Image 1 (cartoon, protein in one colour):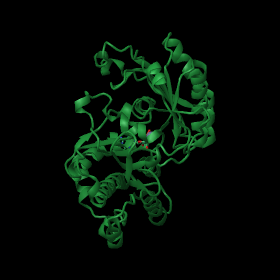
Image 2 (cartoon, rainbow, N blue to C red; image 1 turned 180 degrees about the vertical axis):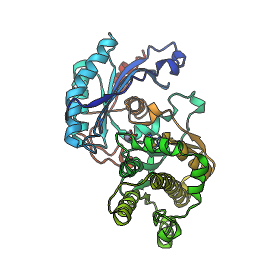
Image 3 (cartoon, protein in one colour; image 1 turned 30 degrees about the vertical axis):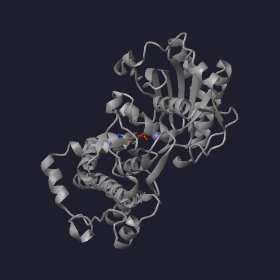
Image 4 (cartoon, helix red, strand yellow; image 1 turned 90 degrees about the vertical axis):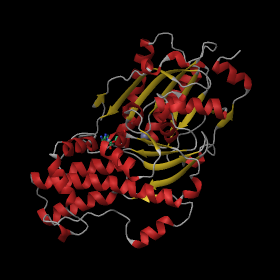
Length: 424
Ligand code: AMP
Ligand code: ZN
């Protein structure tokens, strides 16, 4: 459905980053980055010097409004990108007259093929027209690497570090040892945490988009004494509460726990789909599909939000136990993705997971954005010294540990490298 999209306010981070980090001796190079893996269309204009943090000159995010459709329809998302990328780029470049990139970065995967194709195709065209290298970026690498962007270099996460990426599209715990070396310690076996929050909130009668945030606000508005009382009530058994509602932490039976902490290199699984089915079957069986009354709605909202986050903490701990041998030297723990904005989740992680130095990047860098694609693309170019061939295709499923195993990487020679980063 074209034309129905929400224009987010522009996020201009250049001022808060501070140009002082760019050493005077280098002219710096300019980067144009495009993110189009799902329903967010994002473009960033950045400036970079080799080995220094990027400075964001401008960033735009526009999101397809899928509220009426009840979810993202891939063909709608592709049309949205095809129709909007040109005008968004034209407007940004007109506003920053004279911005001629030295490097073009775009998301290559994982994501929806139509959305990825639209972004990649225009990125290839721009790289070709400007005669500059193209870097096709792994979306999750962007999430992992962007966390330290606004911090002074010594305050940001240092390899090896953990990232919990918790959004509408993914829930995964990643151990990163370098730009190219990532290991997924836990991943969702069904849907993502944000998707689960959104679907549960819709079942509870919330409407619109970003329903995880609505649910957080709704629970935060309940008087604390009532929330405390609700938290006392047990739901492991329908008999244990006056509502007759059963909701337990997934994957907690003994056979699951024994399997979970077995020493194996397999990722630990999260399971979020059951939260919605519990709500649906409760409404169907107890209420014959009628709407929840106000008191029941409050009770369910508190319980569902609590248990989804308790499940995250539980599985993170299982993953840390299973992969303990790989965690030596890990000090930093980044929590990113839209769901990471939730204060209760932050509190539960900080209180329930063994002490790490937790980093919660600002929301503009947590949710899908093109800044992270620029950050990851420049890291690939500078540190791995590769670029993408112009014949590369989008990759729908791209494991994080197979970053360089994808086809189409081309080694960057000294002359090309220096030509981009501006060294004499
Ligand atoms: P992303 O996929 O990273 O763009 O983030 C969007 C997802 O994050 C959606 O599922 C939202 O419902 C969820 N989300 C955003 N803000 C919050 C919040 N404060 N609490 C819980 N979930 C949130
Ligand atoms: Zn993402």
